[in-house]
Structures are given as structure tokens and as C-alpha cells.
Image (tube, rainbow, N blue to C red):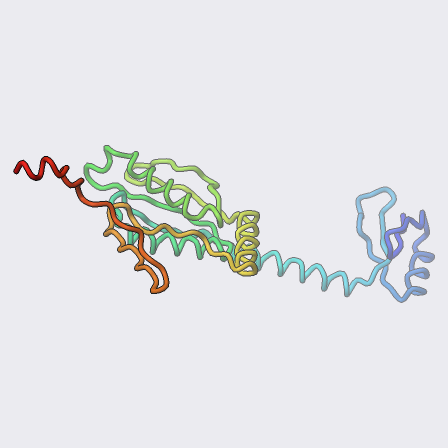
Length: 215
């Protein structure tokens, strides 16, 4: 047989009694690993440890496979902003937990004639979660449904987390707009007691004295 040592080194062609003797001297087992080879290949190893490590690897593989699942979130073309935000936050949580998300948009009645409305909603979802996930299956329409699949984007998540920690460290906060352009106007801040307000321009220029006297 061709004998392989416990560290993977090639010992060479050895008869069975000698191979068994070498294994016993190392307090290890002689295991046939390639019976179909010519000559057969045997390895000196701790067979109990080998079986344990193989079982642990198989268990870990099954655990990872069972933890990754596909969640589904349903939208409508005429969804309100509040419902859109609520559903999209759930999509974000699914992606953070490592799940894939199937986003389904359902059309009703005359909505079938305006697929661009559904595509716009899906594009908004992609834009809202781009810091956590990416599109794995692009939008496609099947009857009354338009679907796409999002998957976790580990690189984007890591970059987002680094940016968040940096902002916490430096004390920076993202700039926030004052509000919508059509919102109520904000009153000007009053001048402090120690300062003076800038003089206001008169609403209209006074008439020259000679014109005023003519009246």
C-alpha cells in the first residue's frame, strides 16, 4: 500500500504489517482513504478526531443552510408613504439578518396598464436599502405580479457600519433640510439684547417735498 503519514507526508510503499506497526508506534489509526488506487492509499491518523471534526463541519453547514431563507414583502402600486416606510423597514431587518427578500408588487384592475408605476415602487425599495442589500434577480412581471429578489450585500453593510461608527466618534450628524419648500415659513430669529437689528427698507420711497406740497 501507499502510506501517508499523519502530517500528510508521503512515506512510500509499505507492506500492511509495517504500516500497522508505524501507526501503533504513533498511537494512531491506519485508515484506508483510496481503495480504488493502485496500490491502495492508507493514511495514519486519529480516526476518532477525524470523525468528530467531519461531523462538526456537516453540522455547521446545515445550520448555515437552514438560517438563510427567502422572506417575502408585498407592495401595491398606490401604496401610501407610511405603509411603504413600514414595509421597507422590515425588508431592511431581513437583509441585516442575512435573509434574501422577494419583493412582490401586485396590480389590480386598470393598474395592469401602468407597469411603470410598479417599477417605480421597486426602484424606490432598491434605493432605500442599497446600504444593506443588492438586487439578485431584477424585476420581472408575471401576470398581475411584478417581482424581484434582494440579497444581503456584506460590503455595503460593512461600509455603512464604518460610516456610522465614524459619525459617532466625530460627533457629526447628517445635514437635515429645514423642511419642504411649500411648508410654513420660519420666523426670523430675534436680535439679542446686546445687538441691534438691521434697519428695514421702507415699503415705498417718500414723495419729493415739492410734489407733496403740490397736493
